Length: 349
Ligand code: MRU
Image (tube, rainbow, N blue to C red):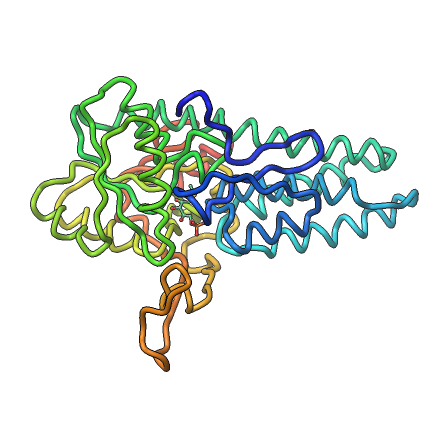
């Protein structure tokens, strides 16, 4: 990223600054959120999105929430904080990082029963900031591990946006691409546009162009054609929630890419921090899938493209069974099959 790049989410001293992704790439504007409700609204309307970024946003929303509680009664503080935790966790259901961050911040309260309220408010803010800092460190490590699986001159396909914008900075799948490009500037990227909200066309293409990495945009339905013609060497995507056996929820359409990659012997990697792994889910069947407004399908940029009266389905994520995944690139290494064993070990590291 060029030097003028401001991280997509940061704490500005009093508020959470969120780069509004709904208007990218045409406008770069930060929303200044001073209440947890404003952050929740930014999450629901996808001004900020991407599982790790949602974890960071959720944490900072709770820091704002803790500060806003006016009481000197510790019990009342706990009750009110728990209510805010619940609202933040419910903002979007699929990305594991949001509930992971809420749990982590709630445990600050549980683990400090004797702390004064002002101390808790400060501890919660520090923990939320730690989530942000750790995410950037994790992404750089994911990049370093991930570049080892990228062949020289690879033509890499990616889906949706698992870049700086989907995280605290640098990105997961795009982090792998950035790190690979540092040592091999002959690699290139194919970005799928990613209907309905076009995160690939609007966000991934924007980030890669900024980073000077060659990128070509395709429609989602061109993936099969390109892969079958031998024009893709590797696919790498991010993840929203990974079950204990490696089954992975990611943006709707990812499963289709994984099956095509397997059919044509193209390695298919998932890149994600361990905070995206949900060890409580034995497999992908229990991953909650968000269904969004059908209008995202029937309309484009607020303009109706389908005839009145037609119904539309809008699942935001699908689950790729672990058998299609060549490896899961985490901050502690590239996990291989059997994922149940390697994931368990990675979580103990
Ligand atoms: O609906 P979104 O844009 O929040 O979904 C995000 C994704 O599915 C991304 O592709 C990503 O891999 C997860 S975040 C790194």
